[in-house]
Length: 287
Image 1 (tube, one colour):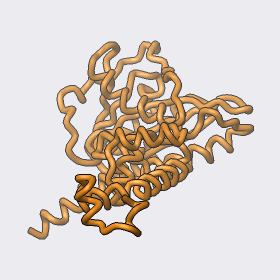
Image 2 (cartoon, one colour):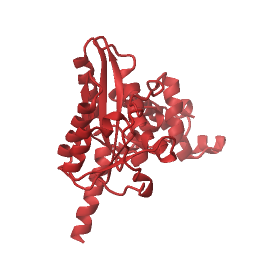
Image 3 (cartoon, rainbow, N blue to C red):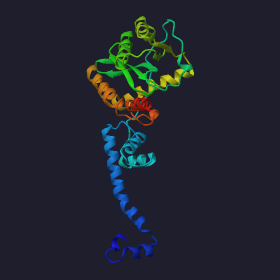
Image 4 (cartoon, one colour):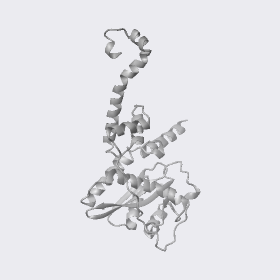
């Protein structure tokens, strides 16, 4: 039809080929739409530094007003040769063979979290550098999956987790009554860590070994560590611990909390999800 429009009227061509006018224009627009989709997928993949796959890119495109299903995005990514960075198996770093009395597992009795600063989850991982291991302790809000406190050190001791907890307390405005859930690692049963919890009016909870709740809750921290390493650490060479710290800072503060969309919170970033909660409270107060 396109090659014969100069010689024949559109109506005559549509009638001869049993094609509707709207169908012809839809066909005509497809190549441009495919080009636009390719450009948008490439731009999103580049902006996220190849950290995300089809589901996250789909959420990003929908958020920008470009409609395409996840399978379509995945198919176009395959065509363009684009893929997310791979992951590696998570290894536990804390040691529970210390003989100290663990705190009870309180979380299994109130696992539903409906607001920020109700439950925080703490854990530790490690990053290889040319200067030796760098250990990262994080505190994650179970409601939004935001990293609310974190600290890094060349030593895996109680000071590491204490500093991460103090950072969370200050970042969140010194809330009280927050349940802080961890495994039974020696750092979390230390006198220094428990003193901070006690003085800040926070509630300690610990997973029991082999308990189903431990698997669910630890999965939150393990998921973050896996994502961090996949998207910012693996494949990188850190000559110094300081360079690794800079990479972790950029990932957590500039990307993960503010930009990266999370499937658990409706494909929003953790802080955007919390902003929705704050906005709903303001709207409720007005009405």
